[in-house]
Length: 62
Picture 1 (tube, rainbow, N blue to C red):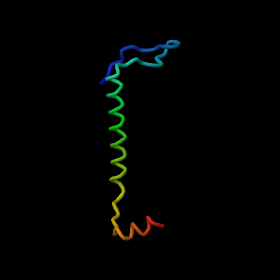
Picture 2 (picture 1 turned 30 degrees about the horizontal axis):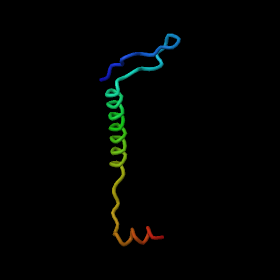
Picture 3 (picture 1 turned 180 degrees about the vertical axis):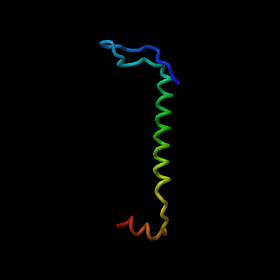
Picture 4 (picture 1 turned 180 degrees about the horizontal axis):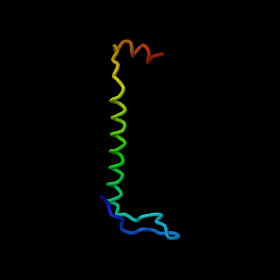
């Protein structure tokens, strides 16, 4: 887990944080991983439907 380097305070409330670039990039990577897992979960809930290549090509060319 990351630890903020500096908190930015305005009117007695935390409004921002200064992080190292490494920590920032780690947070972004974790967020991407979470989004990927959500998408994978949604994809697994839908069953796959297969069809012949010829049928697909006929629809695609329309």
